[in-house]
Amino acid sequence: LYPDHLSGLLFDDIPYLKVAQEEHDKFAQVLRDEGVEVVYLEKLAAEAIADKAVREQFIDDILAESQKTVLGHEKEIKTLFETLSDQELIDKIMSGVRKEEIQLETNHLVEYMDDRYPFYLDPMPNLYFTRDPQASIGRG
Image (cartoon, rainbow, N blue to C red; front, side, top):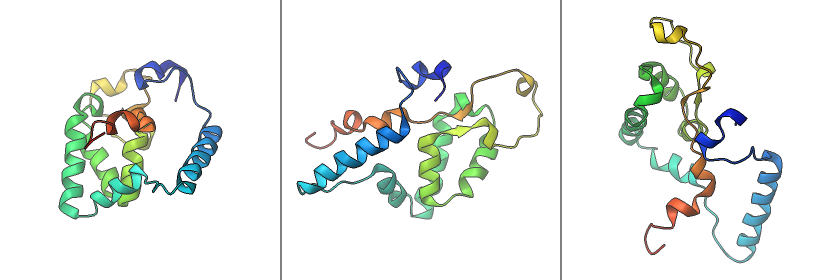
């Protein structure tokens, strides 16, 4: 996260990763101690795309929904995705695809412009607060 991009990614401040991870681990352990099954979204999502056809459709859907930011580089991003394991693919989609991760041939005038936005595919900051989107599922 960069200060210039916080509001667009729905953050007020840059979270301190180490402390956030420690707090999460302690909270998850409290839940486990009370008999709660703690599940992780990235693991469930990776299991869901284990089937090759589902995985291919998932990649196609992600790219189709990201048309504004991939800027015609769907092929290069898809190639990156296809080299990753299921778990790595889910982690990459959740964390975003940085421009520096994709090697491009400069064929379009727009690529010469000074665009300081670091992502082709934005990270998914709302996944940090899964209570919000998950509360409406089932009897939520």
